[in-house]
Length: 313
Ligand SMILES: [Zn+2]
Ligand SMILES: [Zn+2]
Image (tube, rainbow, N blue to C red; front, side):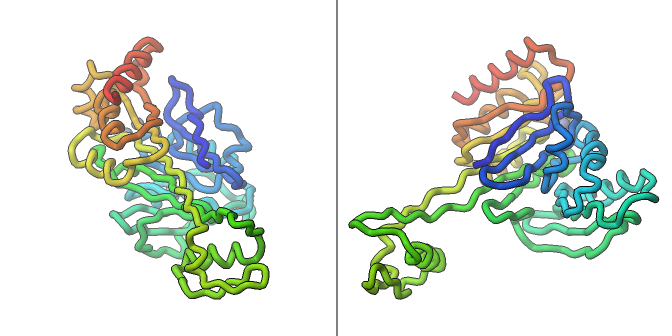
């Protein structure tokens, strides 16, 4: 369902691209420098999810903006408190006298607290804040096939960890010689709206929907998590457990090796074995460590990943 690709090389800042099966658009998580992120991928992006705006997570925003100008549709940007001003300031630092009014629209969603974000629209050439409103929802982004939820973690500043959650799929198992038809959609609707009394006709025979519910099989939607910079403390870990337990796949920051845990504590980061342990506590089979300190050589990163994996066992 979700196909995540790390677009940044190990010596670059973090940038992850998510593609979705049977869906035309891509999604970017964090705008670290990433030469592998193509012009086409930027143009095809429907939303950008920012964890926080330390420079290593936001420095490439201008390049993405550069490639998106002219796509003539809306792109959503989500992020922590301050993101509306920060995006607006970045954009306004350029001269826009030749741009078409409908070249692009950004809708910025600034996560204020659990279950609440503020949104504002920015349009060329003035890029003033329009249609500002506060929305009460634990879902910060929604598409037909999936939603994006979040946790606000502490990194001496708010940092947003994102959960991509595909909707459960209701499937009908055709048994007893039944053939598909209009009734399949009707039965799914009845099940999804818990209507037990709906009259459903199959090959001339009328049933009550509840008599057919045994044919329904619910396929759980896939879940993908991306947890970037955060302090490896109790409070963050309990939030991570609350939202990311049982995910199919999680990308988690692992900025330091265990030997450098003092730096991790000083800089409000996690480190190899702490990230591994929390992934174990969340029962994540497919946990991928990302975002390593740039001081590390290839060998250091191998050791770091080993420490991470050892802690997951
Ligand atoms: Zn940071
Ligand atoms: Zn970082």
